[in-house]
Image 1 (tube, rainbow, N blue to C red):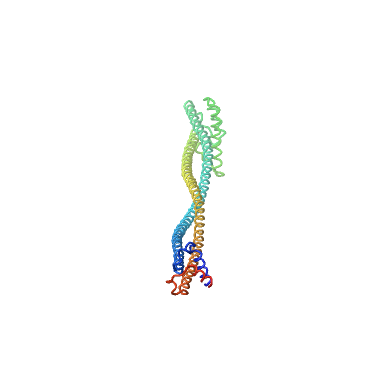
Image 2 (image 1 turned 120 degrees about the vertical axis):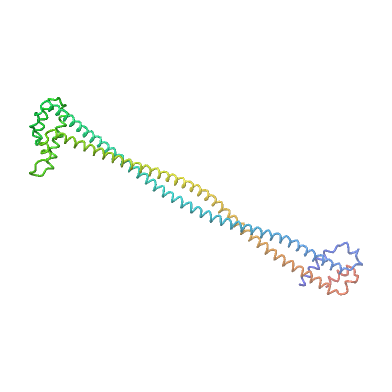
Length: 366
């Protein structure tokens, strides 16, 4: 403490103007020293006040900076979480859309194959129907014309075919051939008629039980050859009607299937287009969200760095200020103690007048 006081005294003596050595011989040097001590204390105090004001403003800035950075970090963190959740949701939407697009594409492909297969089947059915219809129409026409020819011949000679054995196809065909040739019946039509009669005879033989008389043959015997031909014609007409009815039903069923498959394809295509549009929209939104997330992450890092820097810098400044305040307090304490020592050791001398040189000599002797 004595060393600090001596330093203060030395400063004060050195600070005294040299011009006052002669001009103030009659003044009180101790009073002047005390005034200098007071001025020094006042200056230290004033400097402390200026620094305290600047420090208060800096602390206010620190508080604002920390608060703003903290809010920025919180906002960026919330935005990051929101964007990550949105990206996850959009990723899921894209995956679901992909799955639905795949399912719809598969359904469309399957439907197209079913329609193609149905068209092929329908084309074959149409061709078979056309061939069968033509055959039956020809048969009905041939039988009808044959009946007409026989009716004309019978009108000329009623007993010509009365004795024809209709139970035997070869006998009946032989008799018919004579009549048909006489009537200039076309050879192709005659062959067709022969084929019909042979087929009818074979069918009757196959259907008959062993040992039983042929039903068709028996009927023909009682009704004559006209009954045989009329039966064949009716049968052909019945088969033609059944064939046409079956064709109508088949065509109707095909049209129903085709309409159903085409409607399903239209609906599936519409749904697939909607899913593709939704996927494209989700991918666009995801790209935008990923871009926003990248910016947000950078903002979060910058705000976090700013917050950490502000806290670190402000803490350093606060520590420096605290050390400065402590040093200033110690300095003021030292000045006060120096003043006290000076006053205590020179009690009553303050009011007296000494030569400044005497005071200086006395201090050096001490």
